[in-house]
Image (cartoon, rainbow, N blue to C red; front, side, top):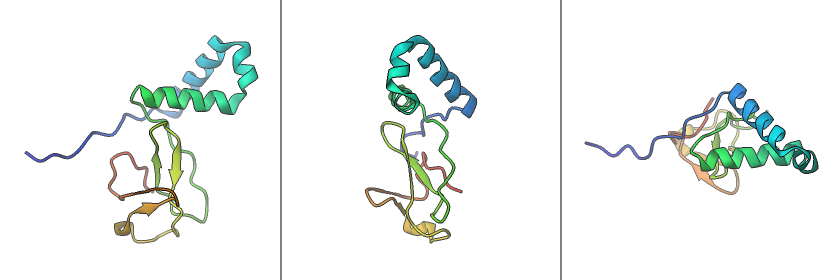
Length: 108
């Protein structure tokens, strides 16, 4: 038996993620308004990551490799390499790197 490593965290659909953010805003009331949409979405993303879920990756930035990987808080980072670079070389965003076959990576 081979050790394939940990399984990737399940990924929510866009609709599931949007519903989670909407519910969080509803139960947070004025606090959600004070936080703002971006901070509330980051809070929901981190809570979901802590519960073992990934959110869908954002659309890749044009002009860069499209590979993306979420961090421990669920925020996605995109490879800063040139589009079409050799995936065998792995991916790097300038702060950290990941192999092309990372189970949590979203590769084009």
